[in-house]
Length: 291
Ligand code: NAP
View (cartoon, protein in one colour):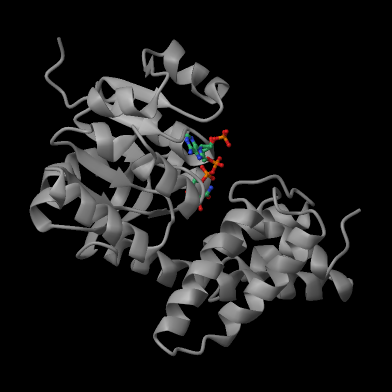
């Protein structure tokens, strides 16, 4: 019998499947649940245990990690009848979904009443970072809980920082998304300009990808834009969810963030055009129509 912490993982999509894979590879007994069961097949073949219900998984896990889609999914897996908060016992509850700071606080309050330890721990680094265990993990919660879970986080990420109390991890993630919102508009416009003026986007990338404009969005997503690869690493509809959360939080603090507001409008247009399940780099098609 392994003396390693038993980890329950809920939400085995693009990000969760890679992240959970690292935990399993490190020797943790891994319990899994996902809305579509088939997405856990590969992990189960490698030794993870499938559970038919979130509650049963929660009752048999020392650490429960959630990596679902939207705040409404987070509500459901934590607060749904018979789900995590009803069945977890003295467990660490880590929500790594990008979700709202106020929901993170609500989970932390409820967890404490029930003798559990909650951390909000959204990530940055994309599908590539998840695959390579190089995520940046932004954590909100108590120092002692953070310290206890640090070895688990370090199996999935290379940059793990406690940002403050409950909700602070989600707020830090909103800072990240605000930066990306402005950046991806710039990348799309710059590469759209190159294409429209008849420059060779490949040679433009060769120059600007190594200069002061360089960064993850330009190097990774810019490269996909110019070859017309709009497959999702990060879904447009998830990005739009994040932009909505960030804008709502900014409005609560009477902050005006015009670039964020513009990005939200542009991504709403893309969803209206049926691009919600494309990757965020599809913004390029606003400037250069897809073939
Ligand atoms: P995804 O591929 O849609 O994964 C989410 C998974 O959660 C799906 O497999 C979904 O099931 C499952 N799920 C949703 N609600 C559930 C519920 N109530 N019960 C059980 N399972 C449920 O999305 P992702 O790209 O991995 O992103 C996950 C989260 O990380 C999102 O909040 C996203 O904003 C954030 N994020 C993503 C990236 C990225 O680059 N992809 C980077 C940083 C952060 P189904 O398979 O049935 O849909």
